[in-house]
Image (tube, rainbow, N blue to C red; front, side, top):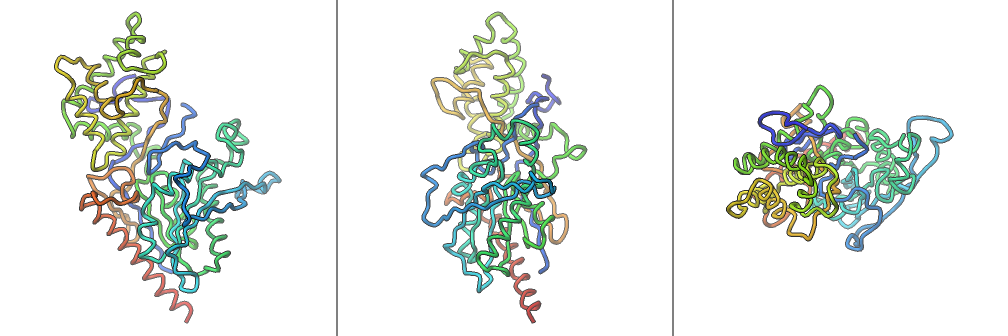
Length: 422
């Protein structure tokens, strides 16, 4: 496992596809005129994608849960294609102006996790619904949470037949059917829809707008990985940006991490070396290979960079731990100190980690209607998570710019709706 370039401190991982993220906020706004078997985690908030049960903390009298009988296969016509499964969606009616006033619908498109975390972890809909008098809709992605056709992810991944319909094309077709169903049930034929998503969900939102322009008049796609495909973005692009983040935070921290990979391998190659590493890093279960430890550490660094948001800025926290290690500490001691600074002082550390990877997005306007809003200070999907009183001014202004763009879409839509009726 070598270092990909002289400037990167992360070893390349051939066992899983790496996504690249500019570590800036990305908003794709599209308007209308009328390895292994690991699954990358691209969620706006850090959560377990395999959660299937409700938590009582998500309960709210404002949220109404429904299930739609969803078609398992939208694109073929064999007998199996007409099977259905229960797809969960949640609605908040509190601020909606109603169908008679053609009030808008803000629809959050779930990504690769249970919907539960998004109901409290995504603030854009609830914070802007009063302004727009909007209906809030949250739709769970097929195969996750309570919307798994086969009950559990383990069962769904068993073979090619059960995995066959687990893809983005089927997912956005699901969203189209649910949204049309909602508009029909509420007699809201002329209520415009804005779809919203973050990271992989942002990809879905942008693709939804392109695939179903007759359903959604616009899409807000935060930190969307729409450019990470072969021959577009370098495969080591993600780690090169994570490296840049750490290097900018502290040159000495960067150097310590860069040197640590070979040091870990050096210790692991000695008699009882893996046992020594297990003890020095306080790993809960004995290490069987050094790659497990390195995988755990680079995932930690990547997570810190991906969610490097105010007020704590995790990258700085890791580097403070590394640079602030007691005098006389060697490289391993310093790395462990950074781990403790980020994860807390625990009796032991579990190396079973879910990879948190993200993406490359568009950072410049593509056209008058495909707009990019970016910042060098941002972190993953920071614009759509709940606002805080401690948010810096640049973030407040960035969210305002997004809202102003959506206001422009709606204004144009209502003008054209009146003209169409006459």
